[in-house]
Amino acid sequence: MPLAVQISQPGGPEEMRLVDLPVGDPGPGQVRIRHKAIGLNFIDVYQRTGLYTLPMPLTLGMEGAGLIEAVGEGVTHLKVGDRAAYAGHPPGSYSEVRVMPALPVCKLPESISFETGAAMMLKGLTAQYLLRKTLPSEGLVAGDHILWHAAAGGVGLIACQWAKSLGYQLIATAGSEEKCKLALANGATHAINYRTEDFAARVKDITGGKGVKVVYDSVGKDTWDKSIECLRPFGLMASFGNASGPVPPFSPAILVAKSLYVTRAGLFTHIATREGCQKMADDLFDVVGSGKVKIHIEQRFPLAEVQAAHRALEARKTTGSTILTV
Ligand SMILES: NC(=O)c1ccc[n+]([C@@H]2O[C@H](COP(=O)([O-])OP(=O)(O)OC[C@H]3O[C@@H](n4cnc5c(N)ncnc54)[C@H](OP(=O)(O)O)[C@@H]3O)[C@@H](O)[C@H]2O)c1
Image (cartoon, rainbow, N blue to C red; front, side, top):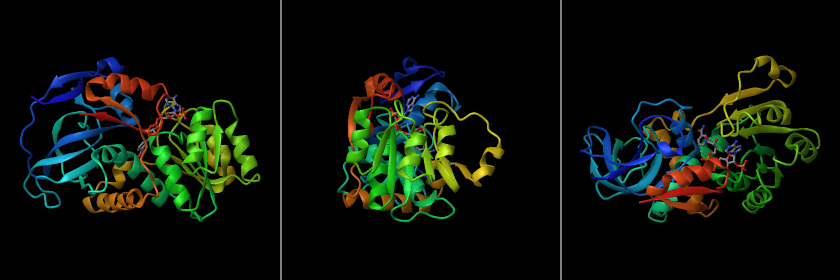
């Protein structure tokens, strides 16, 4: 029987167990995909710990790439034998083979390997909707400063390169000098080690006291207050994650002094339709295919060593993308 990684209750990495899981035929609107590589994402940690509540037992994983083995009724964009990759609900990509909705599954261009596909769909589609669609009311133009936290991570390294290709000056934050160097090497124009420096003060210096039009913040609790400080009037606080913990409740009154905007953005709203998802994926395939964005797979773990992969991610020991191999 095929192997999968399941949890039967929320908890630490030790809750993840390798189990034999029967896999049937796809129903209407579904496909069966045999994974060649699986993507690791911080959302997997939120789902494992119970920060995001899901029914148990739960097979984790939101991203993968592989070969289409069977196609259910009504699926027209995929056929048996296609190379494919996806990011999407429901979880279940930590598995050798799975049945899942076909909607978020995209044909993978021949020029993109399975490993790269698995390393880039969730993170790259996130960078796509943030940089292309989650914009301040005044828009962004070449030369504008934007602030991106955790810029040496999976989503972060893609964003550094993509922002550069759009002409934005991305101010990166990261948790070590090495990570700062990596962000700079990938297109960030400035990098701040936010474990040793006051990033709000540095942003003020860099922008000549003006602040940035938008902050892309996936760190959450630890960076929220200072991120608000970094914004210029009418700026946008784009909160999209909680790596340090969820942002505590706040009063809208904190926005009034600068007439700020706030969004809590999520990928799955953006890829909820087949057309929307494919359009975003095509944009991602273009920037990766053209070499404007390189996908850095910095860590590989066999599926059976998924506990070590989670420990590394949570301990801030990873950079770029991490994949699980099958
Ligand atoms: N809403 C969405 O649509 C969406 C989609 C994808 C990802 N995300 C979010 O984007 C973020 C990046 O995802 P990813 O999978 O690419 O992960 P990642 O950036 O590779 O890893 C998370 C990074 O967050 C930083 N961090 C800061 N404080 C932390 C703490 N207390 N514990 C752990 N890490 C901390 C670390 O970098 P430093 O050491 O440099 O601080 C760490 O490497 C996550 O928060 C994720 O939830 C959101």
